[in-house]
Image 1: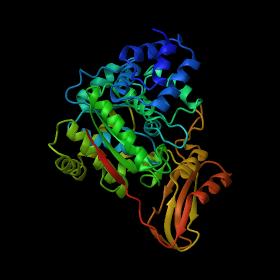
Image 2: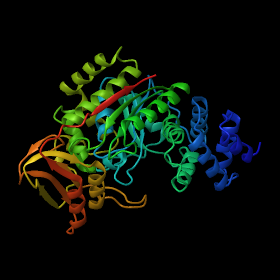
Image 3: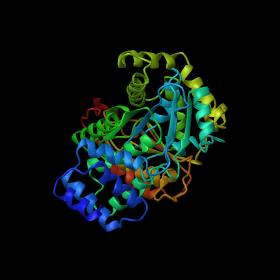
Image 4: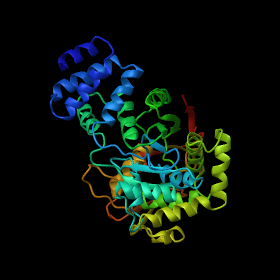
Length: 433
């Protein structure tokens, strides 16, 4: 088998066999196939696409290129949730304990933030003592005994995907549905889940800007998941403005606590119930989404959800007292209020620009080696569609730096006040097999 023949075959619009896809993935992982040939194949896929079987084969080949997590010792159906990224996306911190409160095992492998997209692991590490480096045995034991554990991603998880993604980033082949979908799903499958719920974002703060593009990606990933034996569902949700009101690691932990108590922002509450209902249905704990939602609402109302979060924090070495005393979370030394410039209605809160502003405060990483400040961030006092008056507090910056000129310039560009605006649709579509 020769790589040049595989490139030519895909260039001509033909389907690659499983053996040809595995030959490419394995050879590229072992440095036996040069970057220029991998780039040529990626470009051929970009223009010629892949059918469902090819996408599934590519996903499995990348999932099997490195470490995989065997969760078979965990009792019950393990359901994973993945978000395609966003600003203020605190859903994992809420969904984990909320779904686990119903007895559904949640064995979550999460990543760190990069750029304007926050990372679940960073948020959890703003809790003093919280340990995300559990051994596989301890991870499985925690889930079996307490229904919930979250760890950092393995360094050797899907190495073929990491290498191919880096190449795509410099060869103008990132924006390819089969390559994006197989990249995301390979990591979910390697992480060992039996079923997968996907939160596919669209809007200014998302990779997919339009609902149509998000739909194409969601449908592709759902088909891959079901084709490789994982029951998969997806939600297409809005990321034109930040989700919830808090952006930043410790600030989002506090918001998650409020939400688990039933006191969080309406949009975060609603999205968590929507995603959680899918997780509960896929885990076989409810017959349909309406029943699942009612079970989740009851767990939130009677305190089971927040108590599950308390145990989760304590079980992984964290200071569980901050559940009742969130003021013990890291706090920035300055709080700077940005006022509404004129009377009107909030028409725009550009999620990407606000996420970049928070990154400039130190809450995010500009590069993988950047050090983050867990205390910094931003809290919104108004959302799109809210009527405001000049001088009202629009948002509060939590900062440890003195020079905020660049941050304030980004905020100024992100915010638009007009005479009339409607709140954006939060949940555009549900996608299932």
